[in-house]
Image (tube, rainbow, N blue to C red; front, side):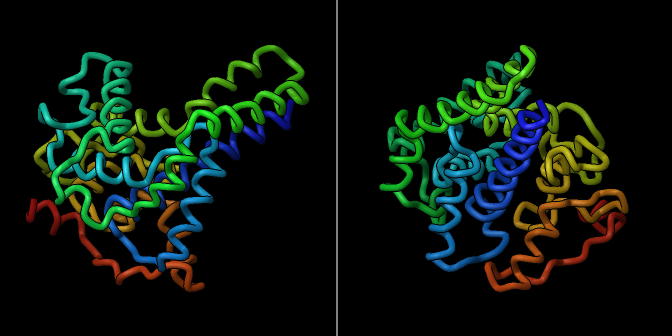
Length: 256
């Protein structure tokens, strides 16, 4: 039993890390830079650790830029304001993301410029054979180690881990929580202490300062675990992080 729980937790956090670090903070916002070789390494690592629910950095990054440009309007790819349920929002998000990633939709250049692309690899990683391969490995692991029936309830969550991560923020962090800043949308800081989502839930902070690598750091309890990993990767030369602007909450409120 413990093997399944360890596998689930590890998959949750590793998948989430590559989503927030590579797809969100790098591909979408260029909060730091890396070499083209390192970029390709992270493409592969994202595929390995997201597995059956791999998300294209190009599709994700482009769609996320559209979200910031059109937040909580009819043109927002995902907004609780315009979707009746979280399931409707997830399906709309999936449709727009798939259209962008596959090339069926060609967004304005301002949303695509500088977003990392590796079309050959993306096509393989997003393919059904790839998803089935990873899904089959998950099933085999459960067959070997799931000793009680209820552990199998975790398996569908692992098949859809990355979309679930996105939906938690896109739905709940636009409906529940507190705000540090006045912004032109409904973004909120969903969790006061964000270990579960590795800093992603500081959504109001992020919508105020989109390109800031540290999503937390405004209030004393807003600790962003991903940011500390980013700093380590910067120190050892894997990435290059620009000096972060220190922002006092009081000053930001006046500027909002």
